[in-house]
Length: 195
Image 1 (cartoon, rainbow, N blue to C red):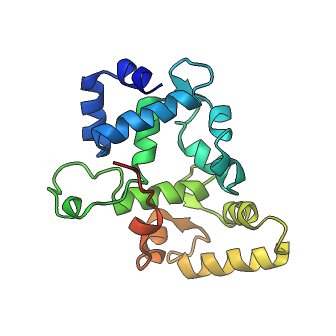
Image 2 (cartoon, rainbow, N blue to C red):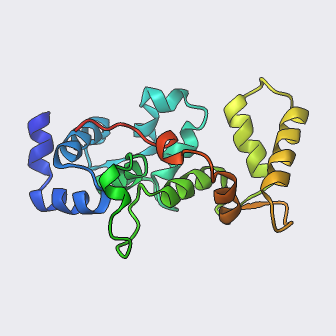
């Protein structure tokens, strides 16, 4: 299968993906091999069902939300490039990237882009704010039936009360950033990809 991965991915595509995502050549070819092994339809794209076969996502309470993040609005397939763009949010920020030229577009794995990715997991209706109902739905996904609705409501109310600075009873992206100001998002939202 390793030979299949390298034959179907052209060198120029690898170079473009490297520039766009920051992954190394070997990481891209390894992830392409994983992508093709998940591609049960062998059509160069992954469906939601392909992702649901990944055991770690199947048992994750936010698995469906994470899977949805791979698919642009209205799409039900994702190609390798889209797959890599989403995975790039979880690439650790290397020391040499922290002092890079900031006039270039922000890397997908920047703190802001990691936070935006996390924010979108909560913003279920994609209206750029997290309502109490959305927060409740995500909390319910995470804790299941282990906490009463009354306790969940209390957690949601307190969270919104602490985060909401403009009084609209929702959490905007800027409010979300402010709340997570002291959280080591770079560490918590990183996956070590083998070199």
